[in-house]
Image (cartoon, rainbow, N blue to C red; front, side, top):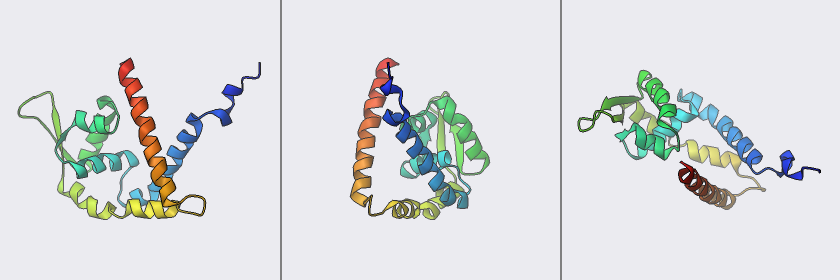
Length: 152
């Protein structure tokens, strides 16, 4: 038996994994200038969209477990990027707010997506290709999330 299905080049997961790693690597110079890690940037993106979310809501938007995001939020609070406080209505919930420093980073980060995308554009890949890729990945994420929630 040749096990063609086990060849690295036949795996869909491998190019997705490598692309994800390379994307994060390409973001690093932009984020280092703001003293942010990529996961911190993602949390800030969520909070810049809607401030004052619970830890669970942030985790849900980022498709992470709360036990994964809690240490990240603690580090962000110690850096002065966010504030966490217990909900007055439900002691079990922690509300995350942007600090003034976290809010001010929004304007500093505003040009990152455009700079990043312009660095990707080439004869081989145009803006429409990137839009289609994003749409396709969104469909894939939705499908995989649905499968994951069916299993849970």
